[in-house]
Image (cartoon, rainbow, N blue to C red):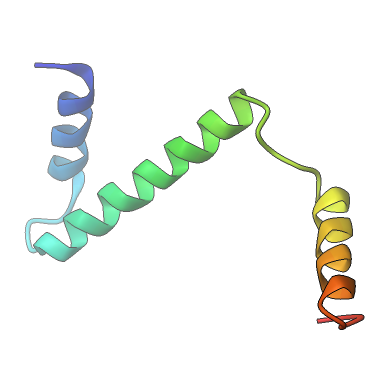
Length: 68
């Protein structure tokens, strides 16, 4: 069995016996989003809090607002 498939099977086995398909879907979704975030960090595709705040201020000014 492939590593990803084994990981998913292990995750499903760790869930309570009475979990629903929705619970499984949610856990898979969260896991994928966390992995995407880790990849983004590894690839340098992130910005600092300060830079994010500066970008928001620039966007707000261009839309005619000064603050949220």
